[in-house]
Length: 258
Picture 1 (cartoon, one colour):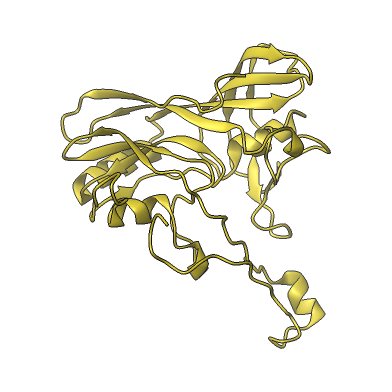
Picture 2 (tube, rainbow, N blue to C red; picture 1 turned 90 degrees about the vertical axis):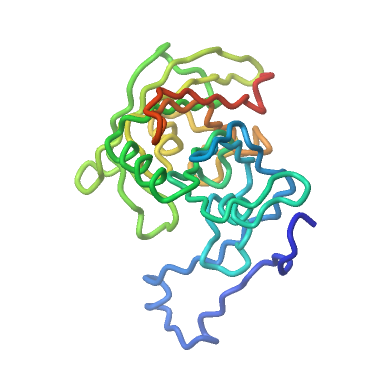
């Protein structure tokens, strides 16, 4: 075992047992998701006195969940340490997150001052982000921009939806790197200019080419074409919060052998 905590198990919800009527259950959001155990380690790509650049494995939460069974996360492992792998960083603060299924580079502040400075960079959208993904089918254009606004889907938590009326601005630039055969797939580099929840996944579905392995935004067959979500955070461009030096962090893609 990586860390000593209770074993995860599935949780069921019985509406009758908790006195919930059918009308109430239709409008109440119940999050009983339990993340499967992740046996891969968080790897340190770069370290100094103020920041870390790490490689998050697919299948690991960025932050521990409200459900006590979802204790394991990137933040938990950084603060507690990974025995024999990484030391403890008790003041570590996540300044951004990656979805459970997304792998790749994350930026961590090692003290309050650095975290505040990095948070300001993310809020000002001065941090550049690049992702690699494999999408179902062949995109007709070699490059383009997706601008569909995104809103929470209150009926299908935790999904989001495209909504011109209530959605927030969301912009994703893309470039096709390779088109694959049997079946037809597109290797795409994404540059998200905004940071909405599930942005690249819902934008890919919106143009008719969902990311392979995605469980929430999928076609009839796209989820079955990969064993994991084929979305990887490959690059971060930012300013060091203390030295002011321009920084470029890179993280190798685990599914680069297409």
